[in-house]
Length: 155
View 1 (cartoon, one colour):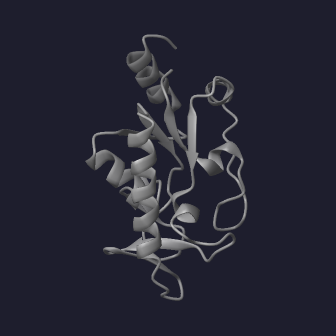
View 2 (spheres, helix red, strand yellow):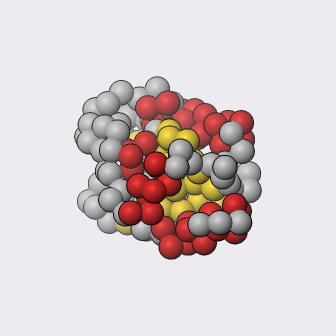
């Protein structure tokens, strides 16, 4: 069965910086969950950060909080753990939380902590892509569905 790496928060797990989940309510997402396709991970928690934690954004080559605390090492450790999980379980692709400094696949917050976004990707999404994995956000399930069909020969 084709496996999909997925942000744990999209499954409703309360792992985000604010101790909330970001449950994806799309029917396809629930179907893939029910089929046992998902390999969930929260790279930030896996990398050693607590829940709750201060929000962090990418600023230059670092991941920092508004107060300047440097979370880069934890984000890098989480990205490496996600890559290892994807490789060990032979996942076909990933569906990650958009805008996150770990998981954003199209956009991330710009580092100003004003809510402004820029084109870019989080640390985990970038590392997965560097190693050949396709990465989609929860707002790209049409593309993910096509990729699943192509990689498994069925929907």
